[in-house]
Structures are given as C-alpha cells and as structure tokens.
Image (tube, rainbow, N blue to C red; front, side):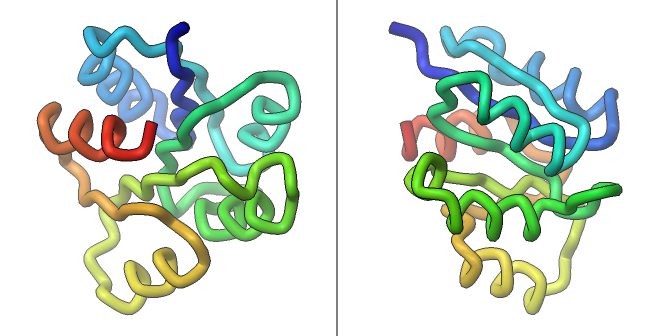
Length: 120
C-alpha cells in the first residue's frame, strides 16, 4: 500500500516542485496551502508524513506541529520542515516543538527523498 505525504506550503510553485521531486517514489501526494488547511486534510485522510514550510499565512509550520502534537490522532506523524529560514534558533525551535527533520530550500531530490524515506 502506498504511503501518503502531505505537502504544506503557501507557494503553489514550491508545492509543484516538491511534487515533481518525489513523484517517482510511489507515494500518494496531498497538498495544503497552510497549517489550517493541513489540519483539514489530516482529518479526512490517512497521512504517513508531512512536509511543511515554516512561514505561511493563517497557521505557520510551527503552529501546525504544535497542533499535531496536541492531538492524539496526529502526534506520531513525522513532520519535515522545508523552509528558506536559515536562523539556527528557528531551526532549534522547530525541532524542540517536534519536527522530525529540517531541510533548507532549495532542496535536492536525493536529500528530500532520503528524509522522507527515513520516516515512513
């Protein structure tokens, strides 16, 4: 059975690029534009891993992780942060909140697939 990845990013181009990078990995790919929409997608689908941007409107990636960790239904789903943020303090904050991993944009296909495969 195919594993399902939820891509969360407010930039349509980034969602398309990440989908392109992982399309050959035999994964189901769902998308959301922000953390609130991601929670709605999680409520309707079985998701194995989330790949999320950090900075998004309405609910950012850190708030999404906090919400997921507070909900028994989602707290075991790994979240990979994929962001342009270079601030080490932000990275540490994301990891402390519960991100499984942190990747910097632009990301290579190999690096992204390695992280996704590590957690699913």
